[in-house]
Length: 257
Image (cartoon, rainbow, N blue to C red):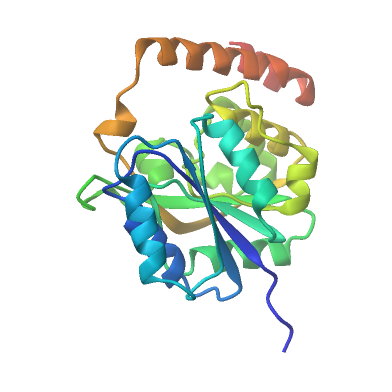
């Protein structure tokens, strides 16, 4: 029987002492067997470090792990560093306050295996609060107000994502070669928007209507400093402008207006 390719699950960790164990448990418990776990603690100031160390001790030998601590560098640089430390042919990101749902890795891998022309695939998720109560059964339609019928169509997906950017965190799987083409822009706070626009502009981003992860909404990730909010708005505008040339004229007008 042919061995499954190695999949790297990448966890950028920052100040999630309450949630990180559930994140790591969900990765370990996922039924895709040939996987590795890469954790990069981006200078957490709470007890995230201690929680990770305790989990690693409790689960020693259960899954190949690379764990590093670094001074705070921000999410984009952390994502790039995680990819550079990984070995898998396929890569999955999951934030340290979110968690995987069963078969979430396999469902995305199967899509990419069946659609070799795609470099990446994203999907749906549930939305939960800090106590794991479900807020929405669909992050895409219930939380981001996306039109999933448009996302299912290669022809309509590009327009839907350009006019209504709605990709939940933790639902993306990419081929390693994707990173060689499109790295995360380390100058941006909204690093994933730029990444997705590059992919969708070339019709390299697929979609499956499956819930593969839980996206957590809680106080720490809904609060934002004013200066960060201003930078994010500027980043959004500049990211769309930077990617204008990748799209048709009609979509360029939608991006601008």
